[in-house]
Amino acid sequence: MTDLVDWDLAARTAGRLARPGPSLSLTEAAEVVGSLRSAAPTALGHVAAYTGLVADPELRTSEVVVDRAQWAAQNVAGMRAVLGPVLEQIATRRSERSGKPAVGTLAAAVGSKVTATELAGVLAFLSSKVLGQYEVFLPAADGDGRLSLVAPNIVEVERRLEVDPADFRMWVALHEQTHHLQFTGVPWLRPYLTGLVDQLAAGADLDPQQLLARLKAAVGEIRSGGERPGGLLSVLQTPEQRAVAAQAQSLMTVLEGHADFVMDAVGPQVVPSVEVIRGRFEERRRRTGSPVQVVLRKLLGLDAKLAQYRVGGAFFRAVQEQGGAAAVAQVWTSPAALPSKAELEAPADWLARVA
Image (cartoon, rainbow, N blue to C red):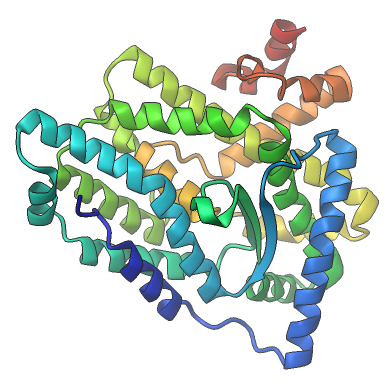
């Protein structure tokens, strides 16, 4: 089947379009890379000690320090791994129902190179914004998960905020390593997320032209910072499909809120200037995330951006205050224990349900 996106072209172009980072001497660059490589495993130990989550030793994970071009190029592979099958599934189902070959339909309807170039432009743009990410969706050859810390962006932000470099790098690592332990220390989480994406894709019924139009719209909105209510979910009509969408939205809020909660809980013990960093960083806030997450949220209508940090973080702080560490750990016992959208706004209701 012809791909909706020319992924190889997207990877090459994204790497070329990524802007260079701040000016660093060879000595300075080596120091930054060395400090980030040191901060990553140290942060993992702090997060594990606080949360009690233990990474599955059988999973193949890695920690890398990258520049913008490397980050942009490697994320094309991640998008291809998760979005490729979803888009192909929709196109194939559509082809079977119409009786027209999927290859012919896609070849005639989709400008894969145009889409690849647009997608590369978005990745190049995001490559200057993202500080770090834990990637769950990877090509099989790349392992089961990868923590990437984007060195030039971390240096640029710490300079702009005028904060202690070592403290800021540890602070960023704490957040990303929390995501690491979520996906490697909670056995059911990865298949649960994959299952939600599959269910959402199964409910979408678009022809290739509509599919391309929505992908291009998502790309444009990421560039402009706009929102597009509904996304692919705007075509989902059944209560069952809407319920899956609500589950996916709640899960994303839990993941981001938990990372913010852990970062703030562990930070005062290991990041001396954490209050200064948090205060100054709040003015910047996170405007992006993993590009796979960003595009998925746009396409599937699940984007909540800052609300996910605010609502999710408030939920975990309330649970900690009312039920202690044991109550927080209860979230990760099974999919049934995850808070619903309503419970995220009312932690006491969730505590009453799972008690």
